[in-house]
Structures are given as structure tokens and as C-alpha cells.
Length: 173
Image (cartoon, rainbow, N blue to C red; front, side, top):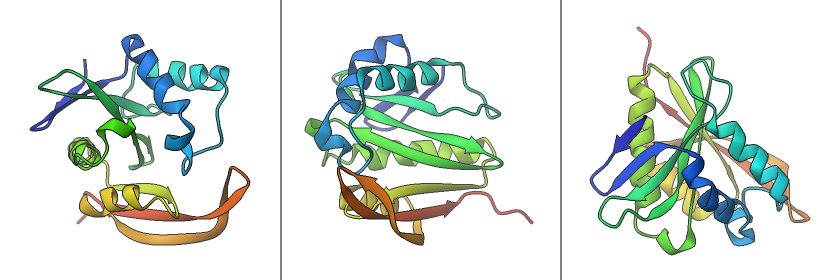
């Protein structure tokens, strides 16, 4: 089983045991306000099932890691990436009650290190403009704003800009 550890957190490959938390995160309109339109239970289940598939560097689906506090064992959120041609897109979402503890930054740092150890050359993070908390997380992890696409994200009848942050992991010589 894939497990990453930080000082305060344990990140492990998502499993059937994490279904209730996955649904709690992806059915919460407040958490999704900068991520996507509301999802139906069927859409959430489809996304969950796609993440249960065994993962390797050649996989076309997300490596999704469930994040837990080490001391309490409590589930706090999800973090992970989707690899394609030497680069990967990162994503994370955390329960409201565990935000502002630095868990997203701590877990994303571990995910970045894991990706680098796999030989992934670069990471990107697409963040909807206005999602200041997520911007701060990626900036703390060394991501730099590389591109802003005007009016390309539509959520809840509102139009937003898409901010693309990038982080170079492995330089080729």
C-alpha cells in the first residue's frame, strides 16, 4: 500500500474505506465553490471508483491520497496528482474543520517530493481565481503563477479566470 508520511499527517492511496469522506467532500457546495458545479451522487461515485484502480506512473487516472492526522487518525482531506508525459497536475481538497492548520501545504509538499522521486519533471495546479487559500498553499510549496486564462471557468453561473501555477521538479541537463 502506498503511504506517505509527514510530521503530522499520513497520506495513503484511497480505498473503499474512504468512500464516506470522499462523498462528504464532493457533495459540499461550500468546498466546491471554486472547483466545480454540484455533482450528482452518481458522478461522485464514478469519480470515486476511478480512483480505486491500482495506480502506477503510467496510469491515466488520478493518484488520490486520503490524508489523516497521525495523532487522532481523523480524515482531513484528499491530495494527489494526475500524471501525463513527465508532468503532473496536482489537486487537493480538505474538510472545512481542518482548514487553516497547514495540512494542505504539508501534504502537498509530501506529494511534490513523492512526484520528484518518481522522476516527474514538473507539476501544475489549476486554481480558480478567487480561491485565495489554494493560491497560498501552492505558493508556499514553490509554485509560480505561469498563466492566467480569462473567463475560462464557469461555476454556479459565474465566470472566473483560470490561474495556472507551475513548479519545476527535475531539471534535465
